[in-house]
Each structure stands twice: as C-alpha cells, then as structure tokens.
Image (cartoon, rainbow, N blue to C red; front, side, top):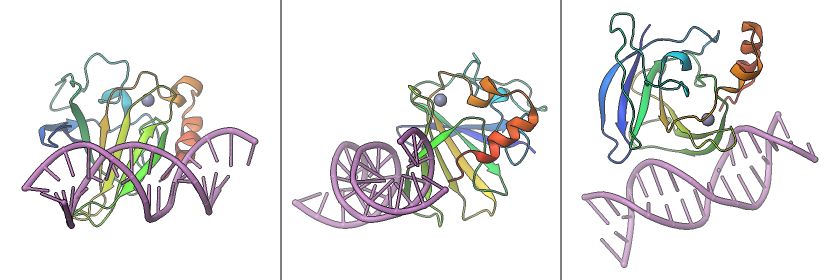
Length: 159
DNA sequence: CACTTTTGACCGTTG
DNA sequence: GCAACGGTCAAAAGT
Ligand SMILES: [Zn+2]
C-alpha cells in the first residue's frame, strides 16, 4: 500500500503537493516508513522517490517546509529507523487523540517529529518531520541482519 | 546509575 | 488586554 505524503509550510501549516511514497520493506514488522526511499534519507540529494506508478518524482524541501506522512498502522508507534526522544504531548482541537512531540536522539541533530493518531479514520497515523538528519539511522550504522534490525525496532521508543 | 517518559507550567502567536 | 491554542521546557517519575 502506498503512503500519502504532503509538503507542509511550517509557518502557515498549509499543506500542498500531496503524493504517494513507497512503503518501506527494509525493516520488518509494523514499520511502513523507509528512509531509503523517502524524505527521511539524510544522504539523498533528492527528497523523495515516488511510487511504482508515479515513478521518480522528487523535490527538495526548503527550510520552511516539513513533510507529513499519512499512514495506516495497527500500532501507534511507527518505526522509521531513527531513534526519537519524546519531549511533549498536547491535546489538539478537533482530534480525540493527542499530538506527541519528538526530537531525534542523535547528538547534534535538530530534526523533530510530530505524531498523532486520527480520530476521523481508525488506524490512520500522521507523522510530520521537521529538518534533515545529519547522520545515518543508528541501526544502519551498527547492525546488518534483518533479525537485529527487528530487535532494534521493537525496543525503540514506543510512546 | 543512565537514560527516557510523563505532565503541568510556561510562553509566543493569533483573533 | 485577554483568552484560546499549540509548541517547548523541565522536574519528577519511570525503566
Ligand atoms: Zn537525526
């Protein structure tokens, strides 16, 4: 299943350029975001590769833009290969579920991420990324086997 | 002990 | 001014 994404203006919150991203297959389990083929890739010159049908549409994000993914997930925690530390949680209007705020756990990386479940559509999770990582995902640097990646995934921050 | 999460306070923006 | 809103801080609690 493809994942919807949209480009978000950090200033106004307006969203545009909605399209499809590829569901990740690198990390097993309930982990649909794949940093290799998405805005999450810190080493990629381009910022997104499209789905099979959309082919390789790509676009650079500027400093005032964030990218938001809309994902169907059976669990609230959606893994993307990076480690995150939660630093806040806020009840948001018009959503039954709170918005959670995370920062990248890597030292000297300023990327942040917001996550909220949708009360409109059951199982829908929205994740917004701000900034670009200046490093590779920790498991990519230290672990090689799928089994080990799975172990990292299931022990990552769940809230 | 080290590190992460929780949670209300705090603060800037907006109407 | 003021209150609603949402983003962040930080002390305490949790693991
Ligand atoms: Zn990072």
